[in-house]
Every structure is written in C-alpha cells, then in structure tokens.
Length: 137
Image 1 (tube, rainbow, N blue to C red):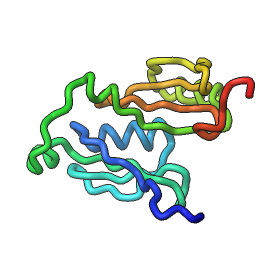
Image 2 (cartoon, rainbow, N blue to C red):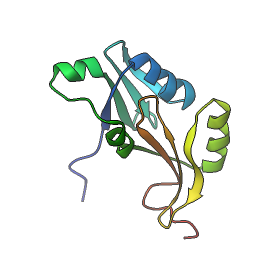
Image 3 (cartoon, rainbow, N blue to C red):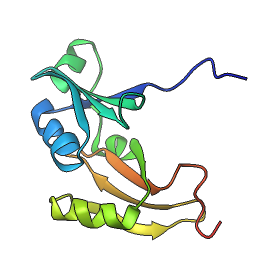
Image 4 (cartoon, rainbow, N blue to C red):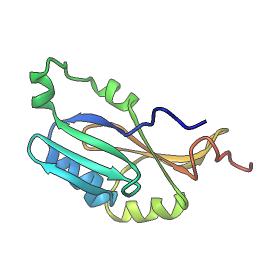
C-alpha cells in the first residue's frame, strides 16, 4: 500500500537565521534551498527528494503568537539525521568546529551522536537508517 502522507520537514524558530544557516549549511554541509534572511531559510536534507528544515526567525514566530521556548524545551526537540559513516562524520564535523553533546556511542536501538545547534536544539546523527540500525544486528 502506498503511503498517503509523508514527512516533508520541520521548522525551528531561531534567534538569527544567518547564524543557523552557517551551522546547518556551513558546518553540517546541508543545502540552502531558500534564503530569505533575516526572516526565513529552508535547508534541504538528503537531496531533491529529501526533507527540509525550516529556519524561522523568532521575531516572526512571536508575531504569530508563538511563545519563546525554554532551553529545556529546545533540547527536547531532536533534528534526526543519519549517515553511512557515523565515526567518519564525527571526525569531519569536529574538524569544522561542531561541538558534540554526545560523541558516537551505542544505545540498544542504534549507534548515534548528538550536537546542539546555535539555538540549543539537539541535532542527532545515527549510523544507517533509523529504525533499521541496531548495533550488532
């Protein structure tokens, strides 16, 4: 049966769209598909058929009546990405100045690592496809 719904992406409210572009495109190497600084940017993940991360200026979100998120709420949001070479990506991103909250490690359900973006959102990277990558299995 063909899926009727698919996830296109998510949008994060950020203090500085340019600073977030520097992180997601400059450090992580993702593609900027739309750049409407200082209000918005759209980051493409995984090529043309992949999903997106919207970066919406907090000032715009406030105008829409959205309250500011606490640091704890932001850390609870996980932008989940995957790679075929977690340890290699870790070394590459460390070399680009990405600070990791958790280095590569094994969980019962997957091998992963996480960093915090400039606004404090958790960016998690997993080895292989999520849900199909149990260590040793």
